[in-house]
Image 1 (cartoon, rainbow, N blue to C red):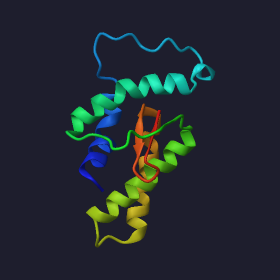
Image 2 (tube, rainbow, N blue to C red):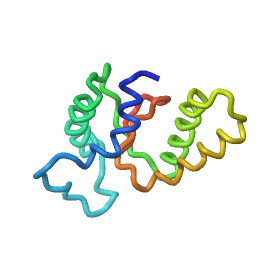
Image 3 (cartoon, helix red, strand yellow):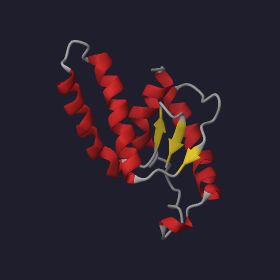
Length: 122
C-alpha cells in the first residue's frame, strides 16, 4: 500500500471535520445529496487530505456516496489487507476476526478513500 493511501486510510475520518469556522453543509435529508454536492465536498476535502499525507492524488479519485453496508465491507476488506501484512505469521481466523471488528467503525467515518476501488466514499 502506498504511503498516501495509508495516510488517507488513517487520517481521513479525523481530518474531514477539521476545517474551522466553516458552517456545516446545509443538507437536512440524504436525498439532497447529489453529484454536485459530492463534487463540492471533494473540492474541499482533497487539498486537506493531500496536505496531511504530504502527497497528491494522481488522478483525483471519483466521489461516491457509500451506503453503510458498503462502507463496512470496504473497511473490513482493507483492514484484512493491512493486518495480513502486519501479522504475517498469524492464522487466518485471527486476521479475519480482527478485520471483522473494523466494521464497527463505519458509523463514525465521514469519508473514506477506497484503496481497492480508488474512489472516495462520502
